Amino acid sequence: MDNSKLLRAICVRDIDQVKQVLKSGQCTIGRRLAFAELHPVIQCIKFGYWAGDARGCEILKILLQHGADINIQYLGKTIVIFAAELNHIDCLEFFINFGADLGFTTQDGETALTIAARKGNADCVKFLTEHVSHETLNQRNNDGNTALMIAALHDRIVCLRHLVQAGADLDVKDKHGHTALMSAVHIKSADAVKLLLDSGACVNTVAEYGETLLCALFHHEKSGKFNTCKIIIQALHLGLDSTVSRRDLQRLHSIVASEEDAVLRCLVMNGFPPLDVECDASPVFLSNLGRYTMPLLESLCSITPEPISPLTLALLLARPCVAWYFIANNFLTRFDAVQLCWNNKVRQYLQKQIDKQNADLNHSRKAKQCLEVLDFLSAKPLSLHTLTLIAISSVLSQDLLHNPSHSLESKESWICQPSFKEKVNKLNIPPSLKRELLHQTPLSSICCDFWDHIPISKDVLYSVCKCSECEGI
Image 1 (spheres, rainbow, N blue to C red):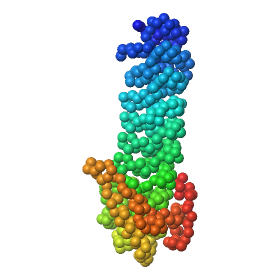
Image 2 (tube, rainbow, N blue to C red; image 1 turned 90 degrees about the vertical axis):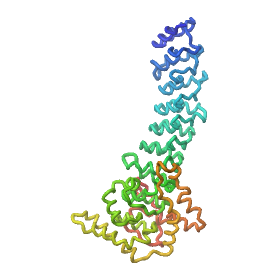
Image 3 (cartoon, one colour; image 1 turned 180 degrees about the horizontal axis):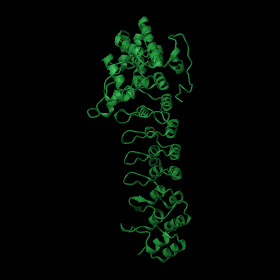
Image 4 (tube, rainbow, N blue to C red; image 1 turned 90 degrees about the horizontal axis):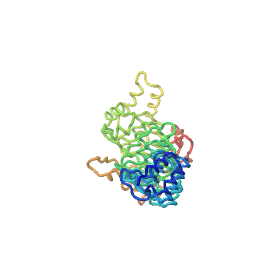
């Protein structure tokens, strides 16, 4: 039988003609058609139909009432898929009454829900989340992405909110190990990141080759609405363990260099260990050091072939306030205890910064203050208690800075198992010592604005500062 009359009636939205053709029996809508034939249902929804097309919607109902297959396919898609793709929410609402398969999966692993999420068709997403099974809600496509992950990746905030409210799994990983939260960071969607963090998304996921949320955030500078510092601090407050991946363990040196003191403070408060880092020309070190690359690198390599500490880097960058903060919190390494005060090249470098002609007066003043820090350390040897903390921390962190090769070692070798924080918490020592090793003491929470005047005293009490500066706002 020929469907041409029916198709023409559908094209012009002539409901009476459609009914007449169907009544005459001069068409076929119930059987499977040949490949080249276009099913009337497909013609109705795919070609010429638009959102809010009441006549087209009525014709679809008539076709289905006359036995049209609700799950008929065209190019591997059903009319449910087309409705979700083209934002025909009115169609979806009555398709379920005809037994539509809302969980149908294409060859690419896509469902109506994943497609609607990608297109940003929020009404369709909301409807589908209310009617699909839990399995379909978290169905992964061939790239390993769920509807929630797709919504995050394409910055479809309203769709993302519907999926979160429906109970979609927040922590599913794609084929590279990335979660929706990490994808939202990659595209710099502040709204998506906030929604996922507020909804309880895991902040300690480790993807391929040790990539973490912290690693993803460090790829982006603070810009406009996407406040990297604020997000890092929020994640740390939510339990982000900055010591689970070897990729993150050189980050503190770059933070010292980039002057992100609020992030530095929060990392110290949340158990980031003081580490001696190799100052070489390796891609890892250079990428972490950021814009302070070649000039500083040449100076570091000339000063010492040994790994250097965060304190040493703060001094070389003429950042006395950071140096005092480290000293006050015993955020010190083996290099600080054994070599720093006796390394004449550090003093010589700082003196050159002071004596340099046409030097910035503020920089010269800070370099002079850094020399005063060295004088303080030389005049007041570290206590046995401080040396003990340094020794324990050095032993626990000695294996953390090994950087696996992408080609020679497994992805899992980037993960620190157990992490530094986990090692400390397993020690059979008093809780007060554990807190000191993790720098979780009132002194570490002192406001960034007061680091220049921080008294080196254990008898001074400090309250936790939550000002806008310390919160990275």
